[in-house]
Image 1 (cartoon, rainbow, N blue to C red):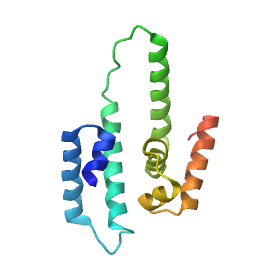
Image 2 (image 1 turned 90 degrees about the vertical axis):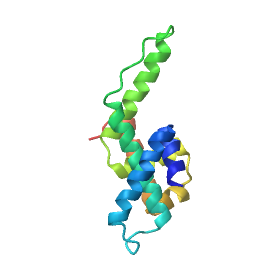
Image 3 (image 1 turned 180 degrees about the vertical axis):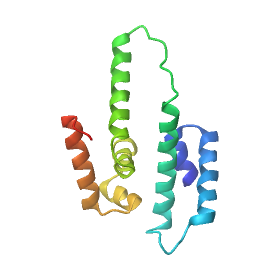
Image 4 (image 1 turned 120 degrees about the vertical axis):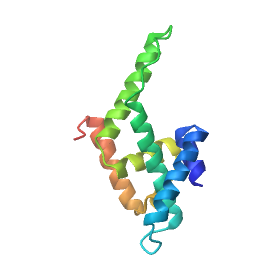
Length: 140
């Protein structure tokens, strides 16, 4: 499950394997089964956070590809990526995680609640505040 989650986000088998090794290495020294809301949800969240953080670190060193023939499509893609990076860099890891679940993974409210350890109401509140701020471009 951890490998599949890392692979779905990172899109690279070697990086996904690295993620599995790092996650289980961390678990070996610090996991307390009595404190976890659900071992499956805990592993899911660790894999998601590891993968998103890995992508974030890599984006800092990414260079833009050369301009394609149709630069308007390129500009729209770059503008969208810049906006997403800006939004994600200014919100909490929990909100990033929930936004990823909702708009990339397409999870339902119940699935997001289970994966994040929040109630459905809590998930909705987080994402409603995020969307409202994003629409106004008022993220802190």
